[in-house]
Length: 131
Image (cartoon, rainbow, N blue to C red; front, side, top):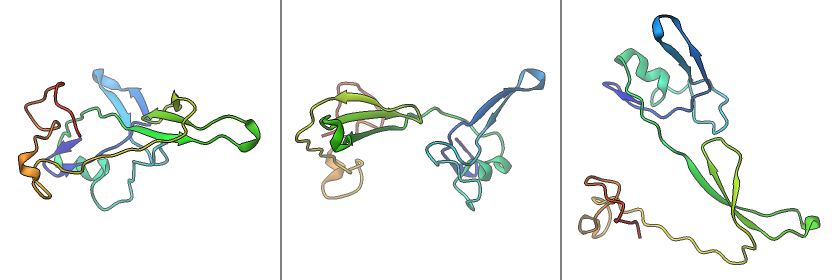
């Protein structure tokens, strides 16, 4: 969400129909991803409210991790994918070796970053990729 006071990310913890065609959306602490931090001095949904009507945008929190089953199960490790606070789903079984690389260049920072196009900045193109 964002408004004149800044930006914040929150996880919806409840939705209730309200009067006059409105819908109340709750961002309570204790959410599954521990994103909602109402006690923080700023940078949270509560901080944005006095700044006027915040604009909400949906984001996806996608996490990948290696699940290593208990030794007694005889199961090999597998790559898991979790979207938002949902139940993780297997992506690949029998993981023996996995190497992950990433680039933290954002198009403006770091050595020679200004010469590297950032696929997350306009113009958006599905043909562009992060290397």
